[in-house]
Image (cartoon, rainbow, N blue to C red):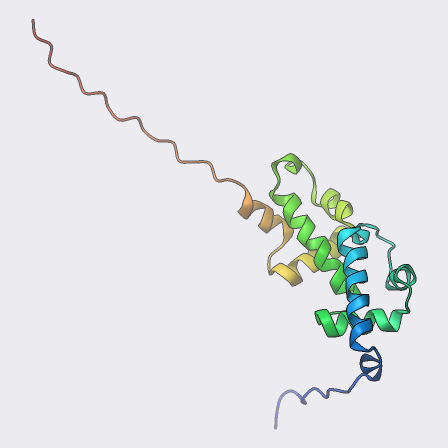
Length: 155
């Protein structure tokens, strides 16, 4: 008898994914990238799929369909991918060296440090702190100066 009751995952066809025609899907994809990526709406903590749909002139089902078909993720994952990407740039940048993780997470749009850590780890496989430490320049080992050869002095 098996210890775990493991069944194969059933996949069900999501009907609304087929409702968006290819031309509309491409148009919506470009608008989504424009709002989330170019206009950096991901930095607004309260920016939702509903607000995005309103801003690009469609509904949340279409936004969801486009994100699932074109990017293979839901709205939250899509937005968090942008946030984590910007956080990685900030963590590598010397100008922000003194910032706390809370400051960085807030700066890129996360509501709290825990959601920042969870999303960062999910995408990168390491914590933001580990990433920051791995991207810091390593101090070079102190080199011992070569001895100066004393020339023979002729008298």
